[in-house]
Image 1 (cartoon, rainbow, N blue to C red):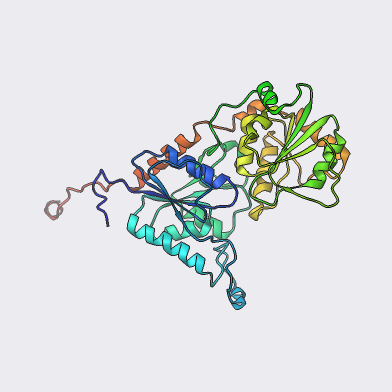
Image 2: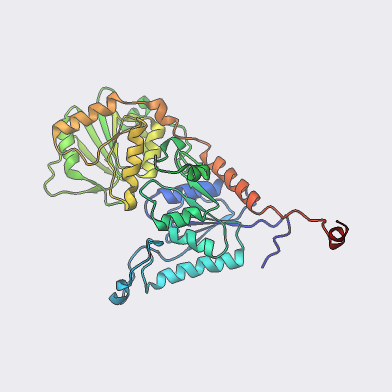
Length: 389
């Protein structure tokens, strides 16, 4: 094992990165880029092709997925109940054993300063059990169960990739005091395009209305049928849809509904839009808040009601109109679009994004490491002193 009493020797930081969607990889890559060049960073992920540019001191170690079914597992193993302190701990999965062994082996050989879990309660608890301090990434949702609370209570700190104003009402003060909020962490720091330039690049006529629908990468996509209803209800507008769309056989898409698929021009479309419709994924929300667009947010199903709770906080702060489901009629669509325009607060939306979020989060992590690993003070107390007392 390396001698870490040498001040020139820098302990690495590890990050477990969930491979679903885009947000986990983007914010962890932003953190790695913002860390000091002397600080090694090791990312553990089931995919190594989802990360934006990483700095030279960062490496990715690919591990098996902790969440996807393994073939050939005897069904009798699923009859053993899981304790409430875990979320995803099926029995008999060799991939989980390999992943956990890889991370635990790295703990032993690398002697890390810190492990960040983005996100897995099991990885957070593994770090604690292996005597490695960890930081748990905090997400929205109903997460007061024993599994989440064990990960939170055992953490050296919590990292929230959103603004403090978007904290849930039910988070206790003690939890808030240990949390670093980083609104916009992982968001592209490039300047936002202006409306006129964006519309020119996209070929949109100056007077034409645009409803931009943004589907995130963490699910199956926004259903097509309600989008067709909305487009037919507003023939004066072009409905431009980016991302995955779940096709419905009964949908009747009109000519003003355009399915773009995945596009690199999201920033231009957000700048050009009169109203944005989206789910409540973290990256999606950050992009729309940075653009300051009139917004309808319709949460997708996620574990622990993550998107539902985030959509509620956005609505509570007057940043978006939260709808529990997509409007099912023309009249409902028109009301929702009108509400989004009437309640638009672009300055408040943009205040949710900190362009220096990655640098500030990295500085917080470095200060946490320094505090945790501060050498014990040298005592000059001796047995002779004790005898003389």
